[in-house]
Image 1 (cartoon, rainbow, N blue to C red):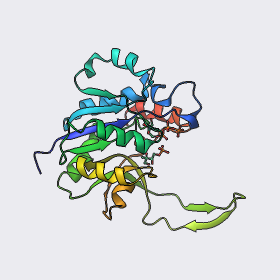
Image 2 (image 1 turned 180 degrees about the horizontal axis):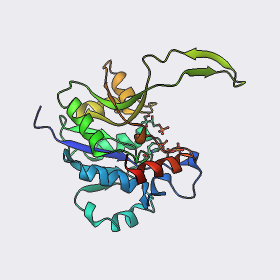
Image 3 (image 1 turned 180 degrees about the vertical axis):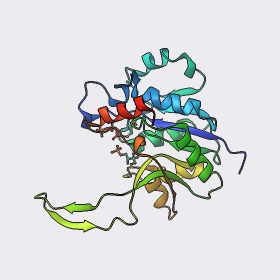
Length: 232
Ligand SMILES: Nc1ccn([C@@H]2O[C@H](COP(=O)(O)OP(=O)(O)OP(=O)(O)O)[C@@H](O)[C@H]2O)c(=O)n1
Ligand SMILES: C[C@](O)(CO)[C@H](O)COP(=O)(O)O
């Protein structure tokens, strides 16, 4: 389906509890601008992306100021005030809200607002690798550390075989119709690929980048700034 378009859907309705900031982490300043702005700028600059949809909470008090400071994003970004109780709910609500704008065979790239290190090159790698794929897939990183399973006393219970393990990143890219069906059926998933897997399908793993890590804990802020300032 070569006439398919590519849309970005950015879940940005979380509260960032684990980072412990006084504002939702997607609005924390990083390298001179809010975390979410880095993500929006990257998708707006990506040639393959037709439009960007951002899911924010219904009572979001920050997005208006962010968009007012970003006239270059006008016309490229649509806000969806449909944040849900979980990331899965926010993504599903967002998909349902764009039903009239997106066709079943169009691709949707779901990307965490909390991964500001995404680059246009990574988006292009994902799109070019999956454009003719029958399922879709995700950016991910092969695990390079030895992994341990701990017991309740923080003692090693088991060393986990890492040879075939990958750490999932985003974007996760699936055709709209498939993704809407998968997420409608799968409630307790932490990523889109898990929902697609529950349909018996095998998403494609596409190598991502360490800079595309998820800003989750307080120490992640300095690391993210390093990547964003150095642009490497
Ligand atoms: N109900 C939710 C929860 C999360 N997210 C989004 O999903 C992405 C990844 O989630 P996570 O890193 O867990 O963000 P938070 O849920 O905000 O963090 P925490 O779990 O520490 O509260 C983030 O961009 C977040 O804004 C969302 O749109 N809706
Ligand atoms: C989607 C994700 O970023 C893939 O690793 C991850 O599952 C999000 O988890 P979170 O707890 O919602 O941050």
